[in-house]
Length: 198
Image (cartoon, rainbow, N blue to C red):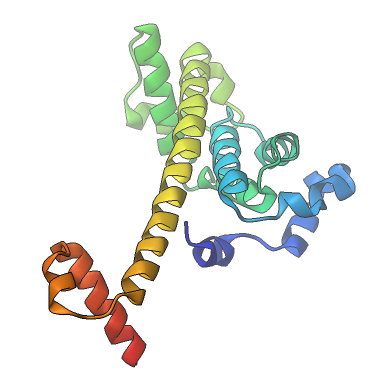
């Protein structure tokens, strides 16, 4: 998993410090191990962030993500940033999907999207009752599991590709070696040698 991409989109320490709802966590929130970017901390951050993201409409999803990050030793800024996937622009479609999932699990009839969006708000969400809660709980756990294992797989794949590139870079361009390469590996090799000349 490319660290440069993650660093580009993660909030920095100062932005996390400025979140008033997280002030009660004090220095626990800024322990060095909670800011490292490695396969373990990032995969846990995705599990925590995607779980907290679908918490039934609450104003303190970031607090939940931060507390769970401390408990599970996950990357705090990444977990906190992920909960903002649910925001005022995405609330209605995302919670409607959760509502549909819950209604399907419970075998109940459901509102249309137009009906749902006409009355849905953070204040009225609880009136939807069991279908929304069951849907959110289902998606919270599904998101956490998929996020955790997907990141671990992508990280391993990235590391494996990096090692393949290093092996290819060390090989000379000779005809015997090129004949035995797959087409994909051959393209990688040519790209690497071209990049070296630039």
